[in-house]
Amino acid sequence: MSFLKISGTKIVDKDGKEVILRGAGLGGWMNMENFISGYPGCEFQIREALAEVVGAKKSELFFDKFLEYFFQDDDAKSFKSLGLNCIRLPFNYRHFEDDMNPRVLKPEGFKHLDRVIDICAKHGIYTVLDLHTCPGGQNTDWHSDAGTHIANFWVHKDFQDRTIWLWEELAKHYVGNPWIAAYNPMNEPTDPTHTRLIDFYHRIYKAIRAIDADHAIYFDGNTFASDFSHFGDSYKSWENVGYAIHDYSLFGFPASPEEYVSSDVQRTRLRRSYEKKRQWMDEHGLCVWNGEWGPVYARTQYEGAKTDAINAERLQVLKDQLAIYNKDRLSWSIWLWKDIGFQGMVHVSLKTPYMTLFKDFLAKKHRLAVDAWGTDTSAVQHIYQPLIDHIKQEIPEENQKLYPFPVWKMSDRVGRLARIILVSEFLVKEWAEHFRGKSEEDIVEIAKSFAFENCEQRDSLNRVLSDNATLVKETD
Image (cartoon, rainbow, N blue to C red; front, side):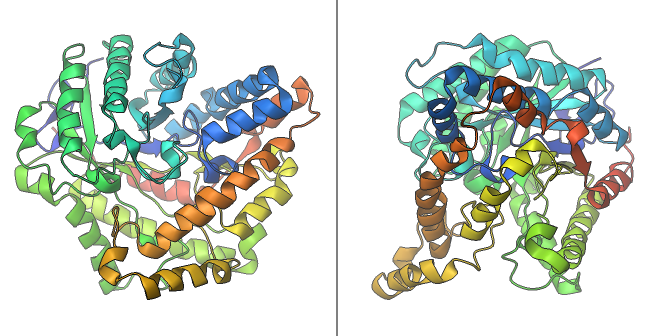
């Protein structure tokens, strides 16, 4: 077994043979996300709230068992059976240090990460280590677990220094492990200066390379892994480095501007959006990895009779994206492996203790549109539209375009602050209260809802992924 390397535009093994990595992200696991597992707000908020309701011991039991059941041997077997060969492992810095005790390593943070890396290796599956959440929040969204729309990572150097320290600890721990395909030092940065990110990448590269000369590194583009326009000739200072785009298409979400019918014009728009993201790499002959992509899916309990038609349309978006990727022999990691039914390749059954316990709460969350990802605002838009109209009337249009525009339009910013942060904050305790009075045995059973044996497979999606996983053969 040897390390994978990046050579020009390709990922290769020790003999120089091309290896195309195709797989999924284990989102919602060591970096929990609200739409994936059903809680409101940010992970640090629900952890604090649950400890207040049931005490530290029971709270720690739930989260530990959740991490254990979320990915086990049966998950790896199923994943491998689809012909997939790589899992991106997002994790939160809070597993390894506390904000009130910075730069003091928590060895227990490696418990589940090591376990899943070893399970994947046993089944011949590569992993990519993805620091999804950095101190202070490296981006403006909920998944940086900062509880704010300001990416403070870019305005406080100590947050950057702590992240360098953490990657040094990670590199020490994983140096010599060839089943780790690459390190992905930072997920979806949003640096408004576009220059501090490059400076940070130079620092993190040197820090990792001082310890680990073997593992490949994937650097995300700025503005949610979409913008490389300020990278310049930085690549000349880095070896064995690839570059990660995240290629989500609005056609695959409820906010799609039109019905997707796979017309020539629509497929051209898909391709142009993708090509724009990778333009800098293509100009310089560099390796591209698509670290996240994929549509979301309708659920019968919310969309009713329209569910099948919606999902057929979303799957067509997926197929058309894969046709583009296959032509370019692109390595990719779809988002995501497991959730409660919105996007995962497998999803927790509605009959499980968790989904039964939270049935009404999840319906309320859906109605209030308090998750940013793929949300349907139709039931509450009339509440927020007056605020949007007010800003349009009072603020000059050029001043409405605040970074990370154009990814966040003005109306998106209103939604992030008003629904995703403000209203969600008031729902956090309500989520935690569902556990009040539960015994330790009850809590373990609730967590076990996320075990593979208690999940259903999204067969329509998995068939497409499996078919495409072997469509493009690796070559010398």
